[in-house]
Image (cartoon, rainbow, N blue to C red; front, top):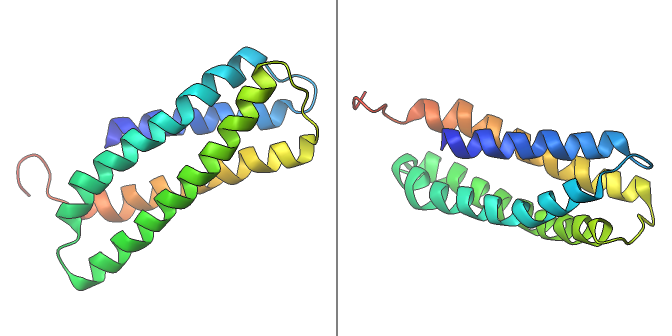
Length: 135
C-alpha cells in the first residue's frame, strides 16, 4: 500500500505541475503519459486496498462505516480520473485547451482529493493495522 501511495503522490505532483504551467507551458508528452497511466494506477491501488487492506480494517461496525466512505471516494476519484485522462489525452494529441481555468480546476480537484484520501488512509487505516511482526 505504501508503494501505491508513493506512486499516486508522484502523479499528484505531476498533475499539480501541469496546473501550475497552464495555460502556455503545458508539455503535451507529459499529458499523454499521465493520461495513459492515471486510471490504471488508480484502479490497481484501489483494487489492492479494497481486497486486502479494507478487509483487515473493517472488523468493527465503526470501521465498516469508514471503509464504506473510502470506497465511495474511490468511485468519485475514479470518475474524475477518467474525465481528466480524456482531457489530458486530447491535449496531448494536439487539441487545444479550450478553457484553461476549467482544465486547471479538474487537475487540482483530483490531486487535492487524492492527497486528502491518501493522508487519511495513512493516518487512520495503516496506523490501525498490525505491522509485519503482528503488532
